[in-house]
Length: 219
Image 1 (cartoon, one colour):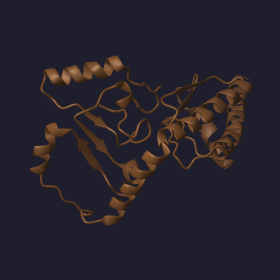
Image 2 (spheres, one colour; image 1 turned 45 degrees about the vertical axis):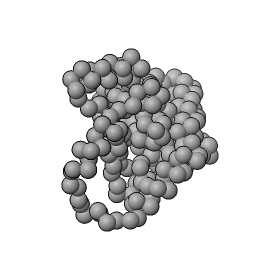
Image 3 (cartoon, helix red, strand yellow; image 1 turned 120 degrees about the horizontal axis):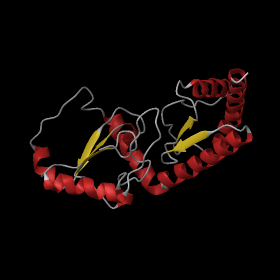
Image 4 (cartoon, one colour; image 1 turned 90 degrees about the vertical axis):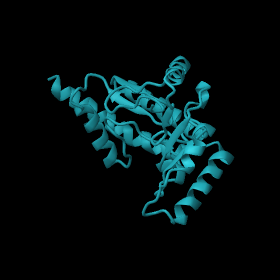
């Protein structure tokens, strides 16, 4: 399972507690492992695991990227059900003896625990989401925002060919902020209110470009 449905180019869907319970029940009935892919969402929604807020803990979780703050490291964590099996699997690789990524992971996990990273990036994500909504409304432009605030997605209404999304992103980029027209975006603990406000300033030019595009199409 993914932490939530995050297909590119469509509204994101967060799981409900009922869905998580049904997934758990289906795995238990089949004597199968419930595995959560945390590669994209790990440490962003809850540092204990993305489904902790649903009251559901998987048997195994796959981690990468965030666990070492971008250094080359991946990990599989799990409960005691698979502990013995894990000791019987031989694993090696090019970075097997690399200590830098391990040190980065230790520091990342310590900082995540001490500073409540998910709460901070959620606050910054809400600041971004609310600002984008205000800017779009001021230009009379329909947008859809979905997903957790920590990993926001913004899509334009009536934009099947993504022309509006690309016009918005290209213009915002020229003014200093990188958005994505179809993929969810990512906030981090490094983002502060000033960074979000600077991104919103760039976004204001992007929305103007979309309004001008609409005007040309509707002539």
